Length: 109
Length: 113
Image (cartoon, rainbow over all chains, first blue to last red; front, side):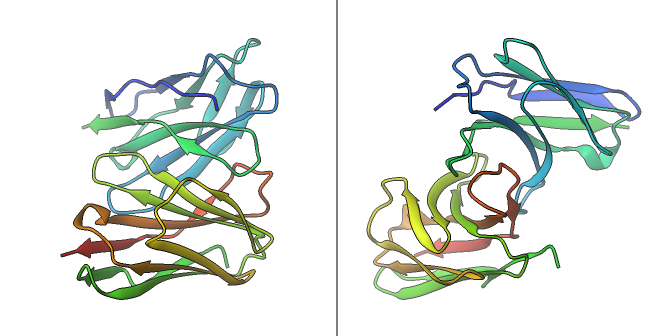
């Protein structure tokens, strides 16, 4: 299984763009890259998923370089409510999705 | 309906008790999952059910016993737990095992005395 490495924590200010990079050097051909957000005492919430290049939805963008050994979650214009833990997951779609340590994002006014 | 509902929200049990955690979804999803999460740690995968059959067991101790009575329900039976089993137990579902988009419930906070 591909292991992921993320920064443990990040700080930002309201209105800024935040980029969280995840390293997954031994990603396999079949693996997708998925990001989740989790608030304290709540279940994780799906943010975005991609396989290669760039994916964008209403809340975030996901950038994946050609070698797929890393990925970057981009949150445009964060607000205080984006303070949460963000997890990068790499899985082979066989159901075995393993969470890494996550990045604790703190957004300040 | 895009919810995964878990009951109870909080559970306190002694080491000799038998209790169950329940999870329900009505999104027509065919894969369901149990994760365990300790404070300040990521969720750890315990079990995966695919089309009502147990497909993944992450070497979980036998004092945790999963059950999938039908495609909408997932139970986790608890017996002879240890204090270190105290954690937030999260249920999730997905359309099938071939997707990474999991829908999580709010979790059941378990305390073992």
